[in-house]
Length: 147
Image (cartoon, rainbow, N blue to C red; front, side, top):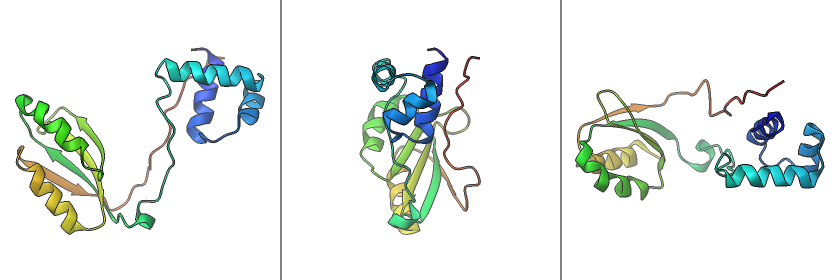
């Protein structure tokens, strides 16, 4: 990956809908050359997809929480398909520490969050933190651009 690829990734993280013509002008290449580079980055698995950033609150999801779950290693084979089926699970990570899983969720109400936690507890002990505010929202990863 060269400095042009790094610049393209940075630009696409800021606005994945940026027109090829604009991207091309930013990296001083033709639109077809930029398109080819983006396709290459997608094939290499560097660019995995394109997402819209939404306001969960405006869609009725007023509760965001992080649920920590302690499960044993032999439960993971059953747990992974179980957790994937929940559309309210925004992210699930296997982590170090006292708990094995860290699960980010969004629900319309605490009652629905409570019901979800009840289902999780069949796998083990949970600890839940409800988000009050997010001073640093999701942001793009910094790409070191070679000079």
